[in-house]
Structure formats: structure tokens, C-alpha cells
Length: 133
Image (cartoon, rainbow, N blue to C red; front, top):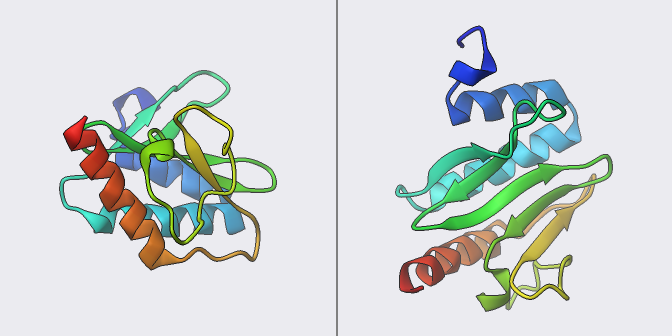
């Protein structure tokens, strides 16, 4: 890995963030990342909103637009879908941001699991929504 974060690829920055966390949140985000990236080979991994207080930024997964972001808090890992309000959610994964105009989120707390099949379906649908405007 290059010596400075400014030279690191998005994947390297996310890897560094996961190593930095070193707890259940890092493991959870790593698993979510694996599921998202494995859903469609066209998905691009990015890092946005880098700043001094968050030098590794926020992981973002895109395909014809942002699919979702992965944020880490003290008590949860949050996947925020940029156009979540336009997605069907028959498995009821969305449990946060339900009153927002466009975004919807999934909060995962320690010892919680996520329905991986349903998450893949949300990601696929988000890609379709992005492609169809």
C-alpha cells in the first residue's frame, strides 16, 4: 500500500478502514462489502467524503449511480441506499431513514445478521433503478 492515503485506491482505503476497526463492525462491513461486490461485476467501489476527521472516507458502491454507502458508528453499521424509497423491500430490510424523501437505510447492530439473498435483491433493484433513471 502506498505510504499516503492520497495515493491509495478506494479498495485499499476500505481495507485500511476495516483493519482500523478490528471489531464486529469491521467484520460486518467486510461481509456486507463482499455481498454487494459479488452481486454484479459492474459494481464499482469508491470512497467519498474524505476529510481530516475521516481520512479513509465513506465506502460507496456504484453502478450507473450510487447504489449505497457503508458507514460505521459506535453501535451499528449502516447501509444507506441512495434511492431506497424507489426500491421494493419485501423482506423489510430497511429499518432506518424510513421517513426520508429518497434514501432508506439498513442498520445492523452487533450480533445481528442480514438476509443476504434479500440484500442482493435490493442491490440488483438499485442498479435497475439507476439505469432506468
